[in-house]
Length: 288
Image 1 (cartoon, rainbow, N blue to C red):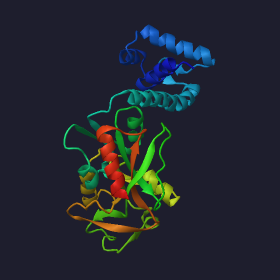
Image 2: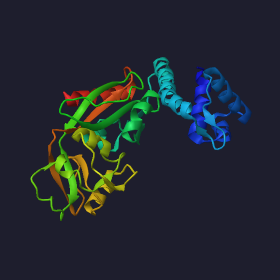
Image 3: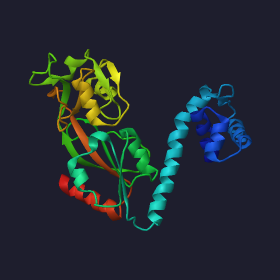
Image 4: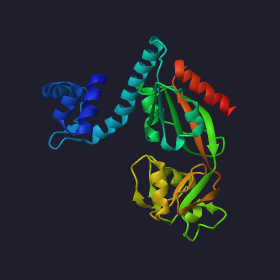
C-alpha cells in the first residue's frame, strides 16, 4: 500500500471531511477523492462512507494498522535526519506531568531548552517523530519492572527513579487516618479520572485485575496541583507518587497493597548529542 494514500485515508477519517483533509494536506479535494478511490481499488473494499464521512468496518480495521505504520515511517525519517544533522545546540524535552522531578529539572541546561508537558501516551510518538530530543515517561509498575511502552520506534528506556504511592483524599474522609490502604478496599470508592495529570484508572483496574474504580469527575488537564485540589475538595480519590504533596485540606495515605511503585524512565532514540547527551548522562549518573 502506498503510504501517501494511507496518510490521506487516515486524515480524512480523523477529520471526517474530504475538504478538511485537502486543506490540511495541501491537496485539492479532487486529489483526496482520487487517493481514497485508489486505495479502495487496491484493497477491493470500501473504506469510507461518504455522507456522513465515517469509516466502514474495513476502514476501521485499516485504521488500526495504518496509524502505527505511518508513525513508524515518520520515526525512520526522523532517526535518519538526526544522524545526518549537526549536533543540535538546543534541547526539547517531552515529559509527563508526574515525571517532572526536581533532579530532572536541575539537569537541564540554563538556556535554549523547551520543556513540553504532554500526556504520557504521546511522548514515545513525539520522540519517534523528532518533535522531542528526549522523553520522560512514567507509570505504575512492580518494583524494578520496566514500563510497557508502545512499539513506535527503536527507543531506549532507562530507569530514572521509583517512588512509593499514596492515595490522596480529604482530611475528613473516613479512611484519612489509616496507616495504609489497599487498592482492593477502594474498588467502590469515587475516583478522579485524570489520564494525563494522574495515573489512568484503567491501569489501576489492570493492576488489581478487576473492574471498579468508577470515576466521579474527569479532569483532562495536565496540572497536578489542580488534581490534588480536586481530591481535597472531595470530588474523588486519586493515586499519586508519595513525592507529590497533598493539597491543603487533604491527606495522602500510603498504598500498601498491591506492591506497586511510580516508575519514571528516560527515553531516547539512538545516541543523543549536544545538550541531550549531557542531560541523559546526568540522569543516568544520578540513577547509578
